[in-house]
Image (cartoon, rainbow, N blue to C red; front, side):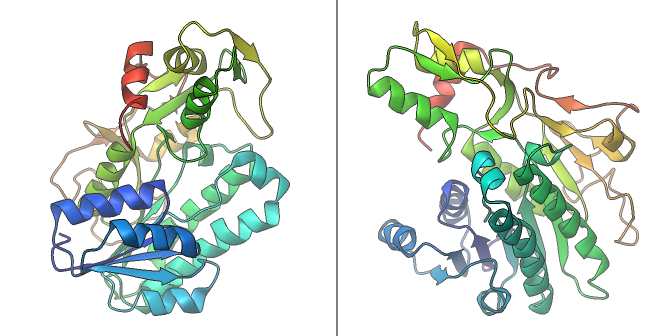
Length: 331
């Protein structure tokens, strides 16, 4: 799919963007891979590592619609990974988060349509399902925008879909590198928010692979959710700091005890496949789409009414040993 094609990644210098681009370059022969981000230092550092002829680096902000339109000229596929994602920071700086996560989504949608991009996949988060924090609320709005964007394409071939998953093991700003640094600094205890807390976990490579498959699976309007394991915060602390006492510090602003990726209300529009779920659009934008059979020929079936996918009731939990092995993987 990506051979001899042009791909643009917003937020391309982030943890996901770097892994996605490395994977695409290793597996395919793209004509161009465009990194779109606003941090010139990160772009400079990335240029030293990614020297392939296909690489292009655009400095720009997703808040800048005109710059996005320039960057997307002759682009075939877009991955929208740019976001302000720190929950406490979003609570403290709501306007900035809204302008990037919601306004930025609108700009990506408009630029893709104006340039005749074939497919756009936007990254979401488990915090967008029944959100209680501002970050989750902005990503829910972003999800809705990308799904509804399929209604604006007319006779154009541009299609939009969303991928939603949980915490990425070892991503920048997450708890794994924090715990690893504290242990390396020789702390005598690890701070945990609440011993009951659980989270969905996925590795960076698994997230990238799921997004790549979403491009093959999508018709337009789907929200893809992978089947991934959960982890307990206490097990995570034990895996990274064996034997260290754990000190409860309380839940941070905007946090949940348990994360959700599919709510009960979404069950009416959810299909289950072998390794993932699909929340289908409540309004059908693409004529003739049978979401129960995707672009890869995989077959899905409706979940039972009232089904929900929540981290504390997930049938698959990582053990301490499995968490330790995952945390030791190189991002």
